[in-house]
Length: 268
Image 1 (cartoon, rainbow, N blue to C red):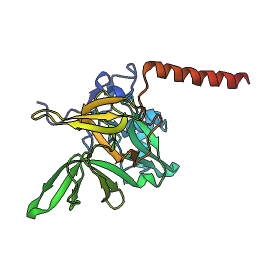
Image 2 (cartoon, helix red, strand yellow):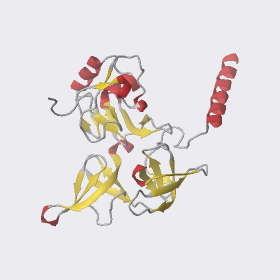
Image 3 (tube, rainbow, N blue to C red):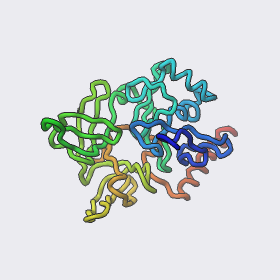
Image 4 (cartoon, rainbow, N blue to C red):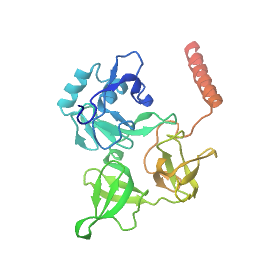
């Protein structure tokens, strides 16, 4: 009789955005239980081995982690399958590097390099606000944190700016029309835009209409939207492309212009 969680994950069952090759073995790292969902995270082994190329094998990753070189959100993590997820800060003090995990417009995790100043905070989406024992108010965030005595104006779906050293709420932004958002689920994952309006459907999902910087409009469910700043200005730096999805033709043109520049540079 099977007891507890499954310990294995087949390569073909792994999330596509991990970008593991089909023929690179039968298995993939199964993310540990943690603050992010198994299919919406990037285990540390993939960050160090497949993305940053600091290790060639799982054993090397383990020895790097056991030397306590890698921190996630300011805490040393030694589990190679620890699930790092959206908005998490992965720091490697030895190389003076800080990365924030954000999505690109194809829905894949991008390790976005950030300065020391920006690595001291993260944005957290509020899942719920409740009262605990003796009437103490607290809120739950999307990454499993519980914070007591929040500002009474903070409600579900708002975003808080969290100081990682003090674990305190520094600032917050309401879920309102006119604020800038990043889409974290569905077909528009990774797109950034400003909320135009929200449709309420009783007994069903709320729909949010978003307009990106180029004027393209798209709609998604409320659960897929993550406020990243007040007005049109995001509080975190965005990865290359600034969350603007290009059409297939625009992408092809961009590639051609880049290859053309490279060819001219070589010939010069």
